[in-house]
Length: 266
Image (cartoon, rainbow, N blue to C red; front, side):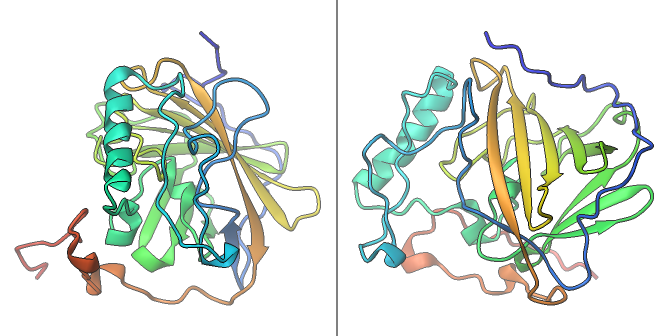
C-alpha cells in the first residue's frame, strides 16, 4: 500500500510565516475543469473509461455523461458497484447529472470541481472562507492547531488549516457525512473520509494549484492523490445567486431532487 504523508486528524502545527494572498477585491479563481487531474505518480482518482469520448458542444459533438473506469484499483468492491450503476444509467440513455445541478452541496474534495464560476476567498486572522456563489456554498477553514472532539458528520465536515512557505494554504478536513461524492463520477465515500488539500499560488501569481490527498479505508483500497488547477479571474464582486430557488425537474428525470424543507425558517 502506498504511504501518503496525510497529517493525523489530531493536530496541525501553525506556521507564523508570510500569508499568501488568495483573496483579491474584484474576483476569484476559476477551476480548470470539472474532473480531477492525475498526480505525477501513484494511485489517482477515478477517470473516464479509456477511449471514451465524452465531448460536448464546444467540441461540436453531442454531449454525453461521464462513464467511469471502474477498473481503477482504488475502489473497494461496494464503491465499484456504486459507480458501475451510474455507468449503467448512461448506457440506458438515462441522465447522470452531477449533484450540483440539483443544488446539492458538493462536499470535500468535490468542492474543488465546481465549474463555470470562480471560487472567492475571504481571509481573516482566524479563518479562511471559500465561497462558490451560485449555490451559496461556503467552506469555513479554521486557522487553529487541532480538530474539535466528537465531531458530528456534516456536508463539509470540519476543516482546519495553516499557511506554509508564504505561498501555500494547507487544509485538513474530517467529520464529513456520507451524502456526497468525492468527484463528478459519483464515487462514494464513508464518514471515515480524511482529505488534505494544499492550495499553492503559482509563481506567476495568475494560477492556483491544489494538491489533494484522500484517505478513506471504508471506500478505498489505498490512499490516493489528485490535482486541480485554477486561473485568476476578475469578473468583479460576488453576485447573489440562489440555485435552489429554481427547482427544475430535468426533463422528468428526478435523479437528484432539489433539496426542499417542509417547515419555514421563520
